[in-house]
Image (cartoon, rainbow, N blue to C red):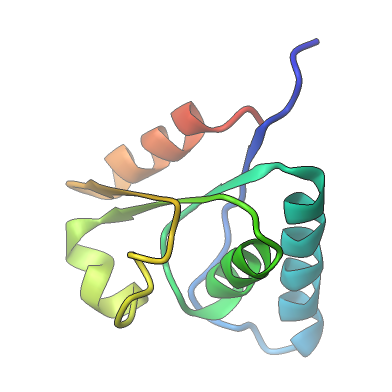
Length: 106
């Protein structure tokens, strides 16, 4: 079985209605960074999506963000895309989800 070097995490740009969800996202991100596993995610800086990415980056991990052009202004902020290890801008949601699947081992 090949080694898992990257994991795709599908999650929302909203924080959810219970703090436990953001806490779990941060815990996952911290664990991924500690294990040297790259995060592949939807590229947003807000909500659960932002929480997991922030935790990976804070732990010194690598993050690939994949975001459609039309969502950049809505889901990212300021330098949120430039702080990522890699940013891929897609034409639409279908291309985004396909790219996320293709870039991750799990």
